[in-house]
Image 1 (cartoon, rainbow, N blue to C red):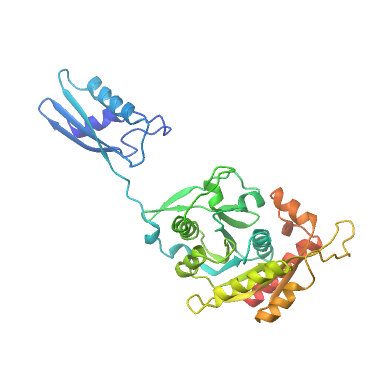
Image 2 (cartoon, one colour):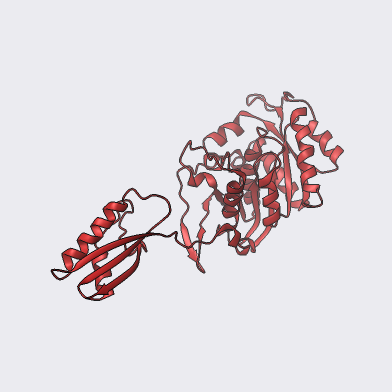
Length: 350
């Protein structure tokens, strides 16, 4: 009897929870010892409990008994062993070295349409002929899968120089990556700060982006651990701040601007985007109703000495496009042209 022969027998044992995978191909056979009349096999299980552990031990014993000469003594031991993986701290900047500009899309508070602006801006840049990717770093509320019609997509994994990489989803001539692709629909991501930071870095640094002119990062709202981690570990070129005209949103803009201007962060702010600047009925495109105040973003940009990159109207089509996965920037109406104008101004600013 040889070790290779025993491994051949163990290949007959399929893991019921891993389709078409046997004990050997899963790397669960840690050791095989053969002495006179006895075979000792050690199976390695991860730290997390495997409800099929006892079944697999019994199945391994049975496979060896079935094939070994009569009278052979068989023992199957188990150990706890986590497979070796690259940790987030070992991730490097290799996957973003061919990216021209990495730009954070940020907001001082939630509910201002930051993700809507980020998605439509990415598509507008692609329509202008640039190579674009978007990383959805809003780990607590990933909305990119819904807004791009890519819900249910599962990114492929490829091996490159000993490291597994995510392959981004490509649609509308943009490469998309989101933590939402790895969570079940409706599943809340209950993560502490360090876990969220690690996930963010993996989404950005463990994705096979390839050559890009622009990589947009849809950042979580506010200022906190995730933002500090982002600017510390990822070479952001700068940021775009999204707000709405009302005072409660504008007061939080100052916090976001202060964060990027802090000497320990020191990232360029390319400008401010005033979202929901006015309401325009679809049937009356020339009419404007300033539901949240007038020119609040314009005044704030002047006060903070940053450019006003664009004013995006509040129209029904933008909301509908996001809900059905067909962003408005794909079209030719005035709201689509507003995003194309925003993209042109961002390119000029960069």
